[in-house]
Length: 106
Image (tube, rainbow, N blue to C red):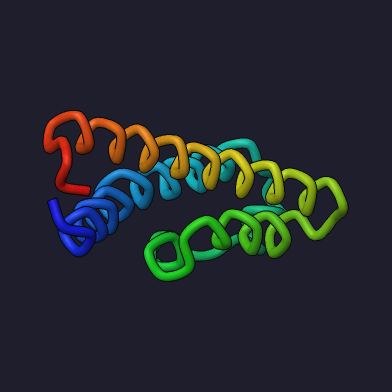
């Protein structure tokens, strides 16, 4: 398997797996917000588009925008670290699997 093929598979994995997980995390966080925080949060379409366009940073921006506190910042940072760690683990596992399936090609 060529490097370009691996990169395409990893890009598709991020799009297909990480983006829905980010949207789920954003929606889950909104369920725990107060009325004032919800009023400051993104509209649903904007929230989902932010997850697609800026990825994990959407979690941080969302937390800061809606919560406007150090706790909101901390929560956003934790979400970003968890999302990026999960993505890294997913891609590392995927690369190991592909190396097993296609030995000697990467």
